[in-house]
Length: 498
Image (cartoon, rainbow, N blue to C red; front, side, top):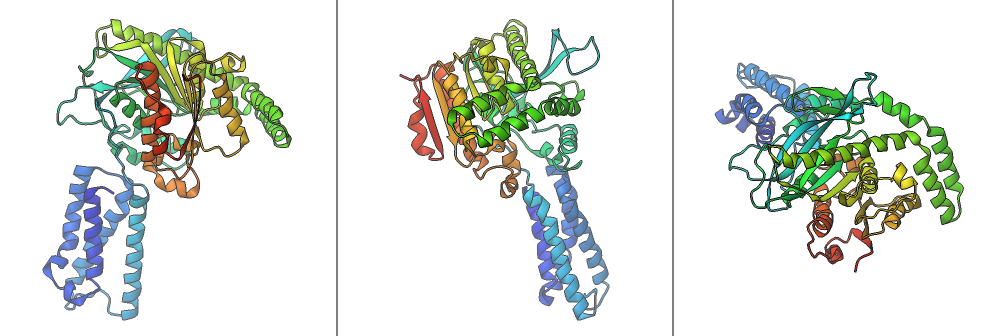
């Protein structure tokens, strides 16, 4: 909880306890404490901002004020004369207080940890329009592909410059995410109170003439801000990171001009269900397979049988290639990034379906000099064709739950012709590899993600993911294996390294 929230909870608790002790109940400071707590509410709202999790406490505090006003009219200061009824009411009031604590405690506002690199971080968003591609997710034949791009980059930041919020202040993103997730209109809305370490529209840092570039592709139906913590960290180490919101195959595209374009989940569901029976049959056959060769062959079929997934991944790969084209144009145009992007040193990274995008993009476009797949299954026509990955490539995997996940990781690792890395992180499940475990730590107790601490996983990224790009985009002499003793939860396979 935030500072003023804690003060407010403490004041209300003192009032509750003091009313049990006659000597304290008559003290002026205690008698007027409920009113002080009531006055603190607008101050807390003004300074820290509104979030629905605090509403029960606001109501409870107003209730205490009403009780205090009535009690002060009684000679003994007691609202209820009957001792048994009074005890019952006291117990109920403490239970209500505990109820007021639950949601702010379970859903705290946790600001993003400071990035580990030496650069301050700037951020900016763009709408990019690909006139050469018809939009396949809409029925308008004249509609062309629009993409929301968010950048994080090394910046020169003035003292006192405000940092961006994680989501928009108006709550558009929070409402879209809450509705889509089925958790209600309010469940994620408080994330617009979370502060990042990124400063909007700050000038690019003058420390270097140019900076290498990394593209980020999000998870299936995910947002391009889902890994802001990682993107900020990369930027703080001297990379310009462009994260792609793959239009309609995302929860929402909230463009800089305020236009909000929701994702088309109905269409995505149709695509997903198109080959469900075939995939289910392959999974059932896998369960009865006895040899590793049989299992590997079935995994390859699972990865290639769904031509709708292949279609989605083709669209994503085309998005990545187009964005690289546009980034090259940024160097030649007047603007924030004019002459500041070193497109000869470009990489790509993605989580889940975005990890598959990183694999396909490296195969499709040699401009990507290095790639990282964060726990993604390698769907896509390039991978299915048997083509090798010719760039240095890292597979960062969750703690495998079964041999199928091991096989998938091995397939990417073995396909790499250049330097290859295969990392497994014990204690991390698939859903650990984004920002939400930082905000919703309680979810790990219901098995939604693994037990590894979100900040610990960020340090693993800072060491191995950033180190990988430093080695292959900046040419630094780094042996990633040397860091393994500091991270016993990480195991690493390495090939093609002198």
